[in-house]
Length: 319
Image (cartoon, rainbow, N blue to C red; front, side):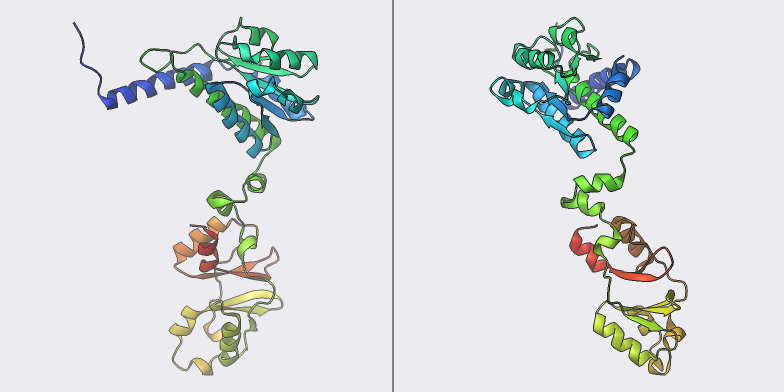
C-alpha cells in the first residue's frame, strides 16, 4: 500500500530534524583530537590550508573564509588543482585541513602524500576512522556517521552541515583563544554594511576646528559660530572642558529675546556625550532614542574633540 507523498513543509521539517540530530551527535562526541589540533594551529608559523573536492570543496571554501576573517591566516587549495601545481602553495609552517566524508576520495591522494613527504601536519575531517585520509592524518577530526537528510540517503546534506559546523567551532575556538575582538574584526571587514556597523565615532565625526564658545559668549556670536560651521550646534567650554551644548532646537525654544542672552543662558548643562572609540552604530541608537541630530564627542578627560551628526551616519550607511 503506497503512502501519499509528504507535503512540502513536512519534508522541510524532516530535513531540519535530521540535520539537527547530526549536529547534536557532533556536540555530544566532539573529535578527540580537537583540542590538540587547536593548540597546534595557535602555535603554527604559517597558514591553515583547507582542501577538499566536490561538496567538501564548497564547504572548505567557507571554512577557510571564516578562518581568514577571524584572525587565522587561511588559504583554500582545491584538491584537483593541487595535483597540477597548486601544491606549491603549501609550505613548511602551514597546517592542512583535508575534508572528505568517506576519507577515500582518490583525488586527495597527491595532496595527502605531499603533506606526509614535506612534514606538513594534517587534520582529516571524515566520518570514516579507518579511511586512507584518517590513517594518514596527524589529527583525526572524526565526524559522526549521521543519516543524510535527502530522501535517497546519498546526497551530501547532513554530513556537509556537520562539517560546516565543525569548521565554525574551529574558527570560534581560535578566535577566543587569541582574544580576537570586534576591533580586530573591523580590520578585516572595512567594506559594506558590516564594515560601517564596526566603524567608530572617531571615524565619522567632525574634528579639528569646532564651534567652541564660552558661557559668557553673546548669543549673536554663538549664532555666527554655529552658522560658520554648519553643524547645527555649538560646544560651550570652561577651562577646556565641556560645560554645555547648544543645538538648533535650543535656539527655537529660546526665541524670545534670544539675542539678549548668553550661551550659558540657553545651553543644555549636562548633554549626552560619546567618545571617539564608541561604535558608530551605538551613536545612531543614541541619536534615535534622544530624537536629536547631533552629539558632542569628548576625550577621556572630558574635553570636546568632535561633533557627530546624524547625516554623517546616514551617509556612511550606519542604520
